[in-house]
Image 1 (cartoon, helix red, strand yellow):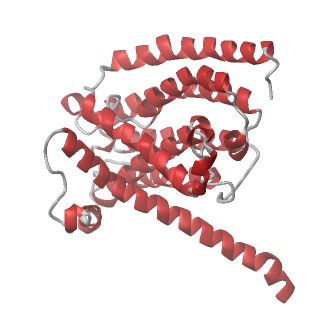
Image 2 (cartoon, helix red, strand yellow):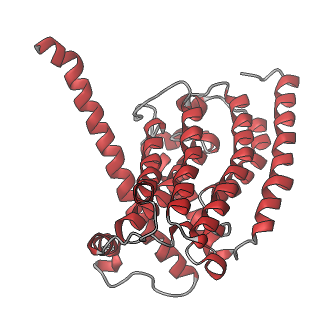
Length: 335
């Protein structure tokens, strides 16, 4: 028994502790991402943002959480109760599960699997199920229309995101996220991937239903979209899942295009800073992009959103996959 405990018990305890640390860090980041968003938008719009609850308003996320916990969960009488309750839990769970393969540094990753990028793409694609379930189970026309909008835009932009990821995989030669980060990329390869980086930034806004692509929550047309019938903690789970997905997509962008935990521009002198801090700093930079886009751009019309995805991004990414693969083959630079 002692040998079995030494062999499996300590590994299990370590794994559970690692999982707890990841979940705790993500939930803490989500809570204070809402604070960061309100403060940054306040600065952009010449107002204060949270400033009353705690010093500089730092306790505002905790106050918001306690408020949602204390409210009553109201379920519409004609709603499908089991599906109505499962939908927000599914959305929140998927947002956390995806973090299992994210390498924060060379040694800090829960599951360093060889198909990490496929796992990540599959989990992020499943988020549409929670949205559709919520819209259908609410038995509300507004919620159902919001769910259809969200599902169609998520599926539309996942196509171009998949092609963008293919270009990165062509340059890295691996599906392992750690190997993608450390793969050698000459300067001309980085320049060739830059257009894909820009398209990916725009696509993750649509994938996470964020402004200027927050069509599922078009207040003037369909009130609150697929979340219109949700309240209290069921609403909070959707809210947490959305912000956790935003942080996940920011981390995914850093891994694919910005060198993960490696120092910027390959400057060796900057390697004295721990890799985890570089990873966090780069992720926060992309998170700021989400807030900046929300505070700057007006909401797109739905036809504009679909036209951008299918008539601009899809043909461009298809052509660029051919350009990247052809260039790598011509210069004998395939990994």
